[in-house]
Image (cartoon, rainbow, N blue to C red; front, side, top):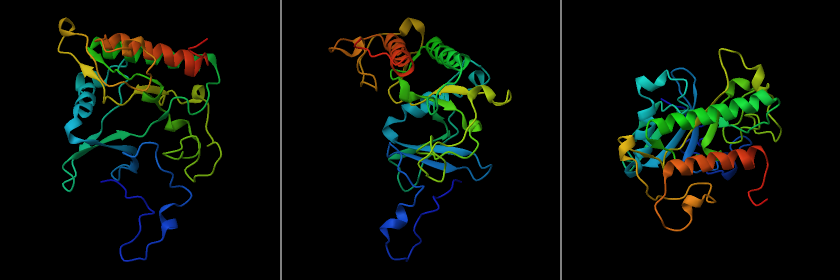
Length: 251
């Protein structure tokens, strides 16, 4: 069971528009995303609603959640906790994930933090490719950080740089290098909605699919089939060049 947001209006009360917009009720950037808390253990989670006909995303996440992959440190794919199927809305499924924060929610403070990020991202990409799996949208918005342990006060789920109260200020936090050894910072890939998995290396082939966040890749130019693994490499390189080194792709 999961929480219902505390500002939900009680049945029978007059409609009050301001009731639905208290200071801490910012909408998520994507309308199919909602935060919640698992009642059994208080774990902060994220709920993602997708159309049931596009359930490949759940299947991909379940693939990397297999027992043989769970203990593999190279596996940097988000953990799927549960798949909910609302009886009142059979056309959708709800994916339940641990709540994460953006990898760049606050700046790196030391070189070893940045190098750790790069190392984990490259390790995770190589691991996916070793399983004949291409993400096809391995861009900045689809890499997140297991970093709730860095906050000295709970962050807002939809504005993770701010505190849960919704105040427009930076939430207090510690640096990545100060994380406890038992709770290290870990970076994971999310959103497998555009991904593709091949049965074997021999069966890998070129193809086409919807464009992801980074549309500057040469693979996406024109209408020719492309290598999805090469697209992943380009997207990661573009991420490091533009969002980390702050270098324009046009310079």
